[in-house]
Length: 514
Image 1 (cartoon, helix red, strand yellow):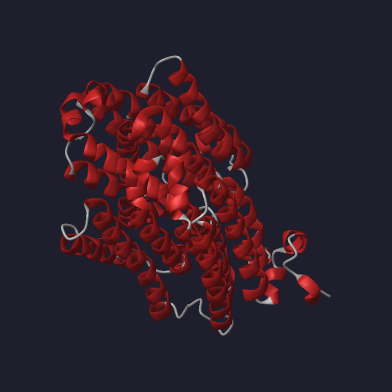
Image 2 (cartoon, helix red, strand yellow):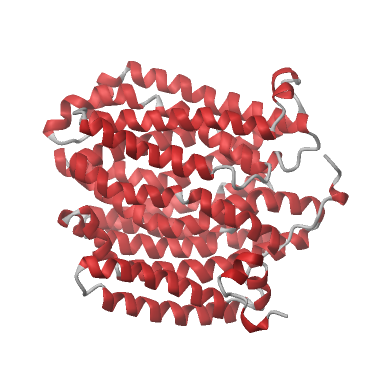
């Protein structure tokens, strides 16, 4: 690998190139949203709620026992001086990320009969809980492997390699397997087996991709204790608490609701929160795509020039604001029509959907600071936001839950914590690193973007009064149109020009182009 002086500068164009392929890779989340109504139709709301609770538990356990290795690679691999060092980072991540998950999965399978009664489920699903835990817990090491493998690819600036994995093998194949197993009479058990099958196929294909971008010879024979290995291990441990807390905000509410409400009501509430979270994840997708790109690019830029970090940080924030704000407003205004896809019983989740959508929009605009902080600041700064975020969320929950229904109260408390946790790294970067994204171009972008956002939200609100089959495609159309208008008229010319051929094809450059 050449030295840093020979490497090209990291610019807004670097962000845009990585962003396009990463967005495609993360469209698996959109496929997942489309699949949820089908799962509810096949297995019922309470059955889907049990699946949601177990998958939320797997996610929480994975984020705890992978010891932060997924995030650590974003810091150490881009700064590796050779293929051998990159392989050392990958080996360390696999040992300390997947190994503990295998041990935990074995223990849970052993004690499944003791853990099953802790969950609230519909009476007809009670006999399935213990066998489901014994089967589904093996998703834990599989998911850890997939997460670390795909993180390793992103750390090598290979942003598009996940596309087929995330969309076809992880999501579409899961839906096909679930439908086939349901058709042959396996019922809800078939959904758990389908999930395992899709993860196993994805893990096998990950190995093929890793072989293209990492030296497996160095992986096998290289020294196990190196400076890169130590840096990867300690970077993971430093990021681990914030990773755990971030995952708590996504998955813990479903578990809390399941424990708060008895029987089928607990399972249904967990399912409803998961539905609300999946719908809001359309906005979260914007932030995640930028986070995946920004972490390795910021690490690379930091090696060369801090000014490059400042430039891409401000650029990413402007672009996120132009996309996330109108998208959240349109989806919130049309939330009743969107929830109709899940059946009439899902309408009680409308308040939760609206709250989460706007929280995710605020998190998207502010939250790009977190990956920048991870790679440019001292390790000790990375825990502050997580501690304050979870503390405020717990305090808000203590004050709110009991005055509102459980679903809305838990969602509101979670959302307050999310926004606080996203805002604190922005303040930290400004105070400790003298980095902030709100340059002289941002106020104009924000004002024009908000005008378009308000108009688009009003249009979607009017359209939502139409019958659902008519309203749904119109809401999607308004969302797409509002994003285009915001990017075309809110962003400065240089930002639109950085999108290159894609920007020209979409008509974002306009007559200003030379």
